[in-house]
Image (cartoon, rainbow, N blue to C red):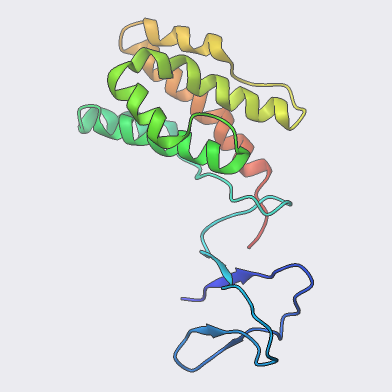
Length: 166
């Protein structure tokens, strides 16, 4: 597996070198260098170098949530909140998202679509989901499925639109 890393500002490609043990070492010019920042090859980045979230199929999210009796739904909310916070630097993050989803599930029904809509607004695009999307959660069973679709589809479109080759 090849692991690439991001270069520091004003750092040339030849400054760090990879030894036969597979580890990267700084140049031997006497200066002190920080460790290189590694990025996994499966991570996509936008033009500013922010790691984009994972594209997930809404049907798979629904199916896995049903099969696992809601456990995957909690995991999905955790990673989605975590990716949104990691990408934009705003939002409640994965830990608080999981906490709220576990104790006050209805709260995240409104917060998650708001954060996805805020992502679009921050990019100066028309938000495709908003806090009002959470009202779908109030309709038993079918409303929850529609809610997942209305949250995950715009998120997938956003991650795909800003994806660039590694």
